[in-house]
Length: 483
Image (cartoon, rainbow, N blue to C red; front, side, top):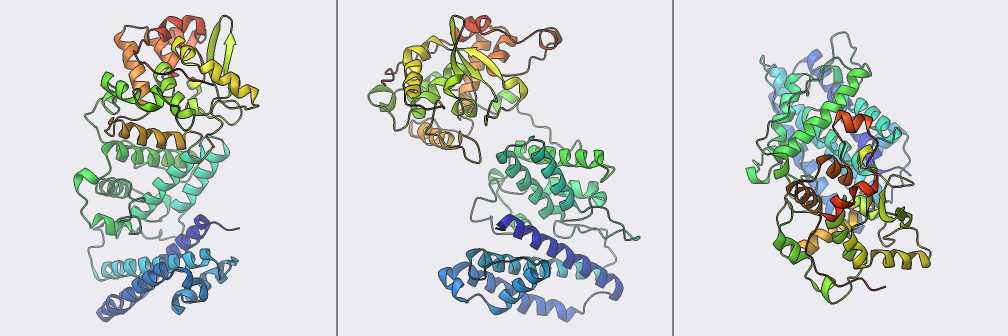
């Protein structure tokens, strides 16, 4: 069964072909007469917009054939040309009809821009909506940017380099790239294009695809809305976009698709220290988080809502590392109970150094973690939190959303305070206590950068980390978990 993403690619390809044909026509025959502009502005564009509105709001009536006839014909023509079979009575066909009209609307707008350029002798001036380099004179173009994106993404997925969440995020970034500089041959992407991409990112709103105000508008239309500075993408997010695109071009160079990386070195220098990007929890925050009824008088709805904050505070582990734990990862090693954070089975870790075995903090034993795990084994469970299901973002997706709501309810607000703040709290606490930084790194799963201990020494044994774990002497008073 064909997916919406595959249908979108069909429409993207169709738009590329139409624009390519239009450029060739303008080079051969010159610009359209001025009267054509009036026809497009007064009739064609309004008709497209009305059709989009009608399809979007016709609800179930769309299935009974009330899609505008010209929109249906346009969609039928594309489907017939590609040989795609799509049930004409399905919701997917309705979406494809709307997408087709949106594609033709975009084409009409771009055609106006191209026509204006054809009338002008100043074609070297580019803008957000007009950066469409021509095909090389000899007709050779190499691969289009979209084709290289697809090859790169497929290789990263095939090599197990990306989790589903990462793939989704990367593809979203590359869609923004294509939306800004358009789908040109990758060998023709130059510094003018990369500068345009960077400048446009600085004008875009955060969460653009999620907010109804922006998500259905083309990027050029969003830019024209003049988004307030406080609502725009953060510098860190802009730098992340630039870094991901630079990685794409680095791969393209190594694979012979282009010779330059115009996105290299474009990151914006930000005068914010790394430790300021996330806040550790203050003592008042911890008191607020652990003084609720869930920790004092009654059990929470799900066990993970009791255990995850406590385990985050006394291990410094990432939320996904905790959510995906198996009962076998809570085990006895020598004279110690340990927590084995590994990538066995369907578990995923952020880096190779994230794999580690750390001693269990005595407070977790006092809270009843061993008895809780024992009760699950008796019931035949495999995972420590069987109620958490694996979703696109891993096992932690539901838990992460719950914790955001929970901390807000507790009065612990602020964008820089998240579950990851437990990790910052642990690292900062141990650093202020003067603990050996290599041992802090071993507990938290960071790479040991020392040549002596990192390159030649083996990982710390759990017994060597006991004193560091026990230095986490947070004074939280909670009711012990009752099986």
